[in-house]
Image 1: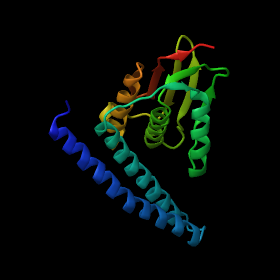
Image 2: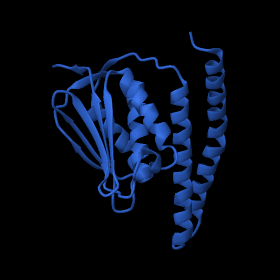
Image 3: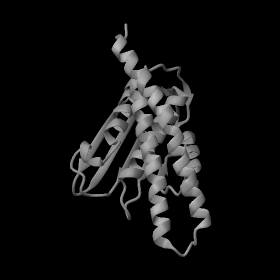
Length: 210
């Protein structure tokens, strides 16, 4: 039985998340409008507008991660082609200026996953690496299959020393990701090296054999 206090906390967080999304969406719309009407030659202004849009995205991501942690895990699995899902999400995010170097092995098998949770997990981790990547060190995404399907995200951005050093939202993001992966019987391995960068590996269990 879930303790009443936990239920109350989840309800409060759910309400807070709902209330925060409206002002965040309004700020994003204002920034988008200003980017259209302000002179394009004013680079400094457009840099600030881009920063505002990224901060809105980061804030929404933090709220979503917290909400995912508060909600009970309920999964309904079916065969999911992770490679197709990754390509679909990257295509959607390319319009927002995201850039990621990708290497996806052809002929990957499907994996038994909850489709909605798999999508939420991928968006979560891609947003995490967009936030921690630095100029000149874009996120790198690799998807392959040996005994299991493996997703690897990395960035050569140096200077990070621990999980807590990755910046606002990172801890919530990683806890949410670990929870979703564990619910499917998989695992996450995070390596942080101050001189080499950040590397995260997700092993998906439940490969569907052809």
